[in-house]
Length: 235
Image (cartoon, rainbow, N blue to C red; front, side, top):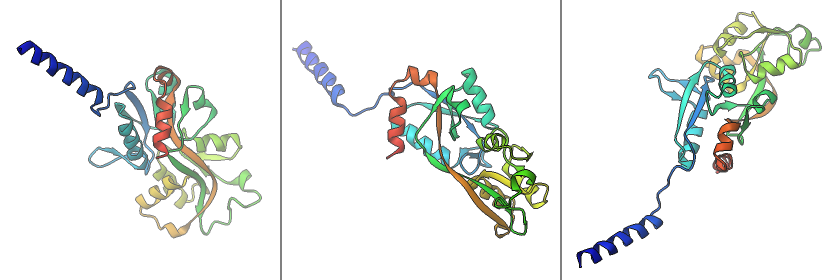
């Protein structure tokens, strides 16, 4: 009688497992490099990684149920080098370019990144000036796609710091004529430095999808992950 009851209990437990709504991680753990790019990604005074992009991506990965960890890196060049060497499974956030496409696949846009020119209101040299491309001293962040775009289009790049706050200081000290950068990043840095935003004008160049890059190797070993990620982005 005891063994009969034990067998019934075991069968009931097994059937319960089949129908119990728990989720097992279907994908391998992700290691994502995160270039510091406030307000999208930054570290608080309590040394906590946060930002619009971090919160958005964390929410998506949590919904999927994939284990993950973030590694802070100095800039997008470091993140791309890690992707090339297989030291990460991808990075976030970034816009598309052919070099990155060699080593990974970009997700659906998590956010939209506006690339724009910024210049002082009293500066007569503007992006609409006939000689702007030839004479304007332009600053942007090192190892970003805005830098690649300026280089490809043969603008005079006068400054390439790691920090957007450095660019805002240089602009107000008139060491450069204009900053070409992500609009959200520029305005965040300007306010962080305490500058009067009314003294700066913006001219948007283009709007770019801003997403995650996942390595070719990770996607090959985890079929269906990118489709699931992109589906969650759209929800």
